[in-house]
Image (cartoon, rainbow, N blue to C red; front, side, top):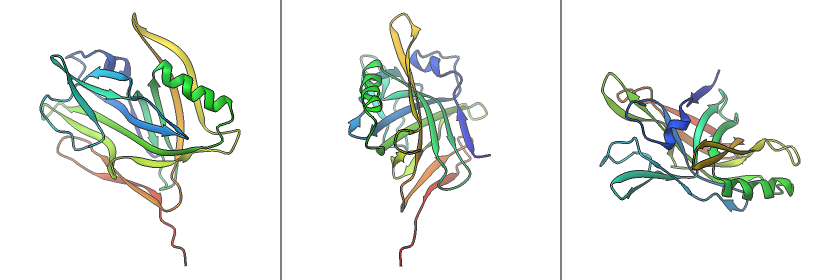
Length: 209
């Protein structure tokens, strides 16, 4: 069945609402081929002020009187298959500027399908403990690397048209499927509450004689 984290309230991540105590996820960084997506989305943080996340790839900044998260995009869903080398599929919303850079490369044939850096951070609210916790993110190391699933001309990446989620915010859906490269191994934190902490592994190490 695999592991799936769905964030149906992803739009609420763009505007903090005290009543929205649930899942939120951020694409903290990503490089596709030769392009490092800009961290050009800044949203008000649901994470408690003054608390340091275990996930070191998160960029928390104090902007005026508000704590904000600067990121590449807001995640709608993450899916990880059962097998260690199954694709990691991410659906996220990115800026129009990042969209244009990716569309240019995809339209040109995307000769390089490497994803040398990808970071994400999912959080959730533990009602029983009345506290936020880190739900899903790369743990060892703090970012993953791989390549876009598929073959040349049929890489599994799609970039949608801009959509307006408020009067002054437009974002674009990006769907990408990433597979680990040979001899790359990663550990994810996959927690079900603020007290129950588990891990999942991704990638394979092939012994070469």
